[in-house]
Amino acid sequence: MSAAIDAKAYAAVDLGASSGRVMVGRVGADRLELTEAHRFPNRPVRTPDGLRWDVLALYAGVLDGLRAAGPVDSVGVDSWAVDHGLLDADGALLGNPVHYRDARTEGVPEQVWATLPAAELYAATGLQYAPFNTLYQLVAARGTAQFAAARRLLLIPDLLTYWLTGEQGTELTNASTTQLIDPRTRDWSREVADRLGIDLGLFAPLRRPGDAAGLLRPAVLEETGLAGPVPVTAVGSHDTASAVAAVPASGERFAYICTGTWSLAGLELTAPVLTEESRAANFTNELGLDGTVRYLRNIMGLWLLQECVRAWGDPDLGELLLAAARVPALRSVVDAGDAGFLAPGRMPERIAEACRASGQPVPETPAEVTRCILDSLALAHRAAVEEAQRLAGHPVDVVHVVGGGTRNALLCQLTADACGLPVVAGPTEAAALGNVLVQARAHGLVGDLAGMRRLVARTQSLTRYEPRGGTDRWRAAGDRLADR
Image (cartoon, rainbow, N blue to C red; front, side, top):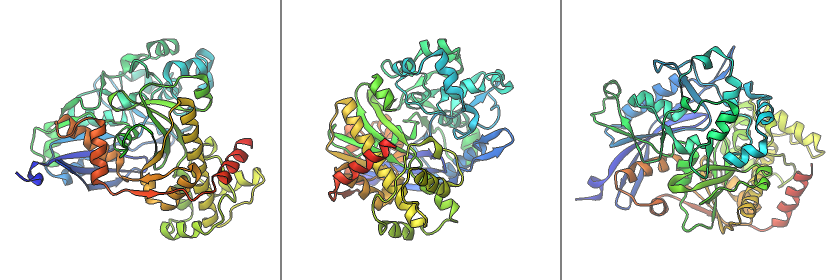
């Protein structure tokens, strides 16, 4: 029997902050192919109540994608982290989920720390400070009529899985971003929940990647034209967990950067790092496949450039990057992790203001602003990779860049230059590939995590970037930025 006949097809529902897609992965002996069935926009909506996700439009896009995918052996869903839907006692959604960029958590972390100091919270959960963590969102929601009516909380991929199957669960890799999971036990931190008065009964039972999550409901089969039964498999439902599973690394001495709207830069470890020094450096311990820990730092990422491009009227990105490559390096840099860049709007002006305030040359043209952003991201990548190695005592020899940023050759080269390490870029659709591979493993087609990565390395297009020297210049620029 041929490999083509042996191959099975898996639908990966992969939802990002700006778009969603349904990808079809075909997996067989030495075969891993990914095709796009359907892509659809993810447009948040600002209502009188704040910034919301249009989750009904996302679900419609998922159904359209499954219809376009054709016959599949399984479906898996991954998305961004922390956000969630609230259900009433009948299982109905209580309004569109709040967007993590909404302002409702302003001042909430300080309220939480008054009851549970930040150092104790980190020692219990290992999660870096971010104002939009689910924990802070739940505290912000207290006292609202919606929250009072809630009987179930489902993270975004679990909500869509529920609508597809009628079954409720909470997938572990995404649950680990709520700041309510103990990364040592890989279970809920009841101490944290109790001290903050959070009812863990809101959450459905935990699932692990590879667990069965139900079957597509008859109504879904009818709407998509799929012939049942079609199982839904729990994957690494946090898209970064799926992306890291598809990093084509060999051995353990590697760092990864998952690039897109955010840059998630760090290491894969076997145990969390819960020291006070780690907390001060704002590293997070999120859970990955097979008992691993994703020890990483969130960096603002290509969101900075996306917002600038939007403000400039969507110029040709290729031409913009060519022009940026001709701008002198490290002329102006900003802190790519600054929360001041979190909200949408006026990004070119805000970057210029940050440069002006720090006494640097102010970038004026789109090419100069773009170069400032990419140099700043490369510096942030360097800092995260270097600090993660030091804090975890885990040296690396190579940096793997996966996700949408692999299309940005200038960013990949600048990251190699800044880190002083070779960068291997690819695959671009790492989250979808990791999603597919977990489904395939649940069906016995691939082996352990190392085997999954070997299959990615053999079958996907990868590009290697060697550092071009000048590491001292990057170090000096990083030191100047840290001193501001």
